[in-house]
Image (tube, rainbow, N blue to C red; front, side):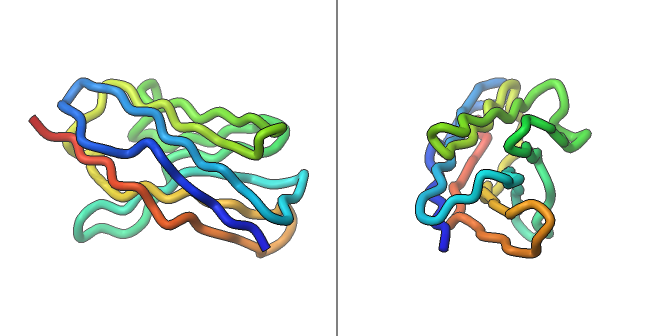
Length: 117
């Protein structure tokens, strides 16, 4: 089994930056896609960005040019650098982990990001 622990959320003013981290521990596979999803108030969970162990990246159009996902395979950790944050980015951000070519998926507990003046 794999556990995910997120960190780095908080309150930031519009135009500010935050960096989220997610560490995977336990029986971590070498072939995975990890990523970030978010769920705003009254909204469905949506994709933010994902990255495979080979570095293939998929980013939602709504955050392209502002958010950057990266990964350290040696540390089983992914990051989400969020710049030029907007109030509409306010959400709980969830880390995800899926073993490639399987349905095995784990989710983190979520970290709150609030963008407000």
